[in-house]
Image (cartoon, rainbow, N blue to C red; front, side):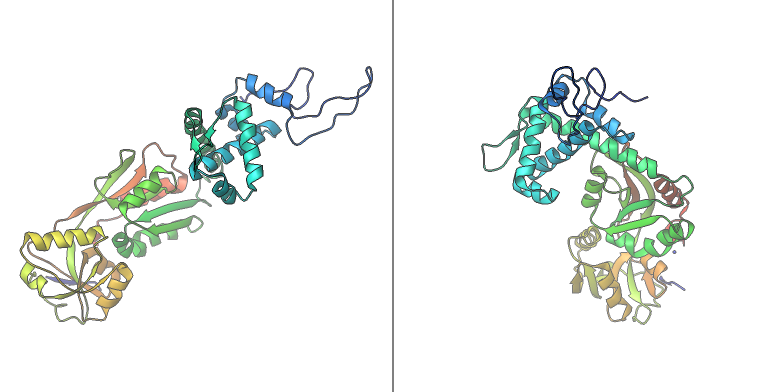
Length: 370
């Protein structure tokens, strides 16, 4: 049948007698106190003090995050960021470019950090820079500490009444074709001051960015493939033959058989898409072959060609329902459905904007019933 659409902190580490740990030494004749000369860089005595200190990396970062201006803590935070850049790039040259600092400056900062910790963090003997055993351990804890600081900063900027904020979303391309005009638009209408960033990408990429805390949520399919990703099942996504209103099959009431579908010129997504995998598998299982006239890697191109009336495609029937100028025809037996899901990272911090969006998703009706 054809369906044509008509939506308490630690104290600063100081020497006995007061003063910043990064202050200058008192100089002059015995019995006469010279003025303290402030220095931006810590002395060897300060480094020895850091080695003796029981503060962990997390302790120093907490001091920075609660507003302390201790120069030593700020220095260590900068060193940690430099260290992680070299660890990621495996090269001082590439890391320096990424940090926009000179290579000698970066090398000096890493040497200072190694002197502070009393261990060698990098093996510099090969063609590429490699983490030592000490470096591997330190990198793991340094990443966790910076991640905790980032969460703290995001929490501080959270506005309980959604007067501002941001939301980082991703979805597989076919979802973008029917969710942007209804679900996303409705959320934006309710919360116009929340800055939305939406990208279309494969499920593997969505899960990778969620795991790296570079996304707040993503639309994909059940089940998630990574163990640190959790999924909220949403609705089943049936596929249909989608045509323009002027296509010769647009008003057909009877479902198409696999053989009839195989004789219809189609514009399909490329084999890189999960939807195409479902289509190809269906044809193989029913002993038919699709007549692919055009193959493209963008849903937008598929829909533009279909609207012109000469070609049809196979996409979720919700695409036709949301478009207003497309028709969806049933296929019998139907193509296998997949369950749409909202993916998030297990244990991730959820901003007020993210929680509001999840509530909106839960209230959103199944697209097949719209």
